[in-house]
Length: 594
Image 1 (tube, rainbow, N blue to C red):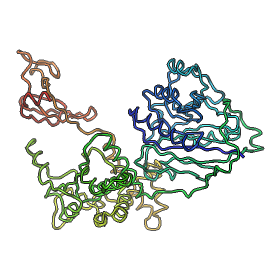
Image 2 (tube, one colour; image 1 turned 120 degrees about the vertical axis):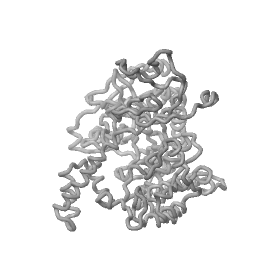
Image 3 (cartoon, helix red, strand yellow; image 1 turned 90 degrees about the horizontal axis):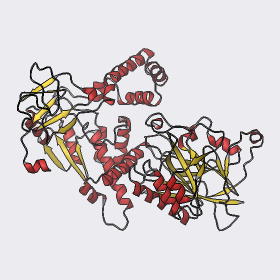
Image 4 (spheres, rainbow, N blue to C red; image 1 turned 135 degrees about the vertical axis):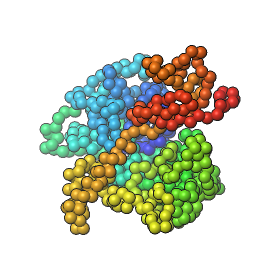
């Protein structure tokens, strides 16, 4: 019997944070070694694009890979193409480079924008290492391509994320060639109900999970180790006619002989999170990272008393509960921490909110802002808005891709499990945007305005986004689910209604909002004299006397795909393509300097 101890990890890696990312990788190797592991599997692209070879050089020149096989995910350029690779290293040498052969290019994935899939499966090629790496390691070339590593006592191969889900995954062919250990490095965004095993590292033996990291955690490094029993695979008839796969001979042993002191890992009951737990823990962990890495002093949340802003308040409250749980030997409570970093206030416009909505918002809020934003807008523009536009101008939106059905489920869950009892009352209220003034004989309701229920909208969303259904397919699918209560003609009318408003509002997903530009230390763009035939020249004087004195404007600048084909005359000047331009007072020299 041969015994093998392996380690996998969750790492909280961030783009452009080279030192912190490298530190996390080293910490995971230290923990794996301390646990006696001889294989350490890292993340897909755990070493970021810039300075990838410098980071790998740092790892190989130290003792990090001594006595342990390490798989590092990083990008590599070969010729003129960039590939997504696992670099397999041991004892301060690169054993081989395994490229990714199947790229994810659906949904939120756009790997083909950045990488090329490797299609050469016939043989391993020789890859010329960069000169500084070659000189430092005394290693000029390294095997490169599709293959596996043949150690003295076992065979090990690497897969990379999407390859696991291919119709004919590489591990099937590799297993016929005698490979016993498969390392699959993954790096994926979180998406609600994406996969049961999504988001956590695990060790699986013949279908049984024997080690599992947490799916959501505030820890930067989490390592899980498992002990396995090696065995010789025998596929008999299938293996007898297998296609040969190239391999690299590695003159080291990984396994230990039979040892009663080393216990084998037993199958575990897999931990799954419910949708409401995913909504709480996933965005909660992300918000904490956003807060501490951005250097911000806290969050500011306007509370309208509706389901959306209240659910965000619940998610942030969950975030602070998670933070307190990982703080050891501290008297700090979630409430104290929340008062420091989370400022909640009631967004009270008086004319837009109902008494019920205002009362619900007050349950969660601390301060009341009355007319402040309205007064500022009226001072600058001379106009007073009649309706408010809810939370669409926020900097971050933790619930933007979550359906209203899941939001309501989360509110019910948070009222009990997060001890925010006021959320239950908010969830029970009929959903309304309250975009129109409150009247005694009319109550605005979302589902009435939309002409469809949120339950129906969730069905449309899944069919359209996940299953990519068009009008015909979207008609056929609900006919089965709604056939007992609706006739085919009624289903058809609902689908037509959805696609009508889907086409009307689809552009909102593909255009940018206006950005604020503050011009300082330069002339305001001027236009040519009437009849001169000259066009618009930013910063160039158009009449005798040269440049005009500096004036200051606050301009709402529209993106190029939203240029407005009309002009606004402000103080005798015509500014084409700008819909709003507000002249402000001349600042002091100190303001200009700052």
